[in-house]
Length: 263
Image 1 (cartoon, rainbow, N blue to C red):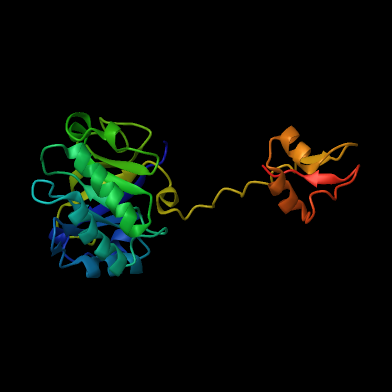
Image 2 (image 1 turned 90 degrees about the horizontal axis):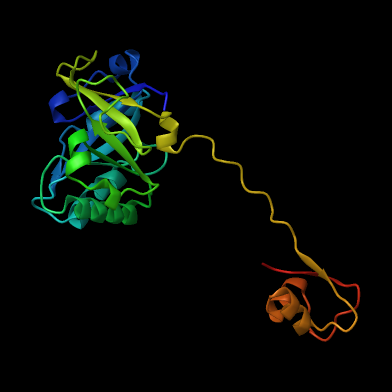
């Protein structure tokens, strides 16, 4: 992972940034706090999101988890409502992010429940989970919920950008400082780098080419063949062979006829 693409994350504390100045300073993406627990929506969510989008930033929303208080299904539903309202769930946006900083029993099970529920609400398979290096190592049991659709965002300060203390092939963002001085923002701001091209996260990269057509399997009718006998030879129900070849009467096949064999 050679990329080091700069980005930030913001919440109420950062107020209403001058997003043109942020983008002009070279920051490419931002995560914006949307919700916390149940019933809390950041009062600056809409203004921050609209401003960042207007300045050409790549944006995504995050949810601050309260596993000590609520079920993962309740919180996923609350977050999903804001993702839908702001049109922030689908491809083109950074994947929805779960921010894990509050301790509770069985955090791994809670995260798995949240991921499953959020996917059900949004239809977005890609999910980001944020935590510190120490939490990934000691508290949240990533092996129990990481799958190919889950990306990890690791907070580890005092390290070179892109070199957190916890690193796997699922780590895509490193938060390397919490006291960044960012043009256009009057408060200290979290600084991040993406370790992959941002369009990998948004789904906006060029899709892989579609697979070519499968080779067509055929069978040439031999003397004495019947359709049921051909089916037995090739291991396909004779009725399916009749269907794909448009044969209405299974007794009407002829020597030399080329039959398409479905697989």
